[in-house]
Image (tube, rainbow over the protein chains, first blue to last red):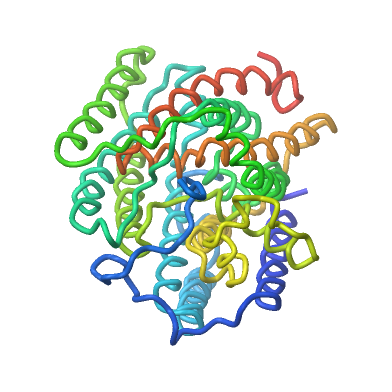
Length: 56
Length: 374
């Protein structure tokens, strides 16, 4: 077996994940999006990171 | 990872390559239009990481393995240079824009140290860390592709239990900042690089040119990531979020977990992955690595046969990668790379514990059937 079926399976899995996500999440809204770049935006960063600890 | 050459005669035709690049750019533009320009930029940055890591064969697990087994320090030295370049920009950025940018600050504790040690062992078992597993899976590596879903499940479970583990004992986050903090960080990175070069085997002190280029490009991408996202590069949060969204949609109640019930994470669970920072860069890394593999016709490479016990070991190690990295407040990227480059003490502790764990993982691989006994 080559790497091709592995890559194809991964692509299908990612596409399935995104389809599931779009079907179960709040709709995307580009008009409510944050500024393109956080630096200089005047807004606090709200993204989640691996180093975050609730209440920390 | 499949190699380092981008020679045209070995890869897909030029029309195929143009189509690949066009597809990636169209996906980025579609996302920017549908969700917002920041998210398109983050996907583009992720693609850049994936392309660079795969094309220039730059990573974390392999260089640590080569240092431990063969006293070959090239990759480790390049990592230190890369992190130092990021720190040179990140320290002043964080100081000047403290209301808009966050570093990768996290507490040091018993579970954090143990988690980093286990992560170091597990990443050597599967030969892939946080970014490495994504890159390798994207390039069609069957071991990493098998480890990835278990990595995600482990990340979800580790986050679910995180506050119990931190309750075992941890100190408040310690963050170096300002010129003094930057100087201390650079001195630490230089000390590691000098020690690695001092311990090098004869004739192995030279760092290949591709690693210098990779260190420079990855550092630039990491700095741009900090500016665009407002936070440093990370990997494992996104993987755990994918599973958390899945189990929530299937009816699971996560309110019993202080981590997943926290307001910020509830928001992330309700919003699309296409608006989550680490999910977007993770997807970009997978796609970027796959783009390089297709470009080189690397997907025609055969997949090696492994015994059943090796596949079982990959599944267990994949789960441990995810679980332990949540206890350690990140993997090689979120804790080590981003922690050290933004001044967090936990990044340095993570490095020491994970490097020690790597000695164990390297010795486990032959026993688990993942490589021939030495």
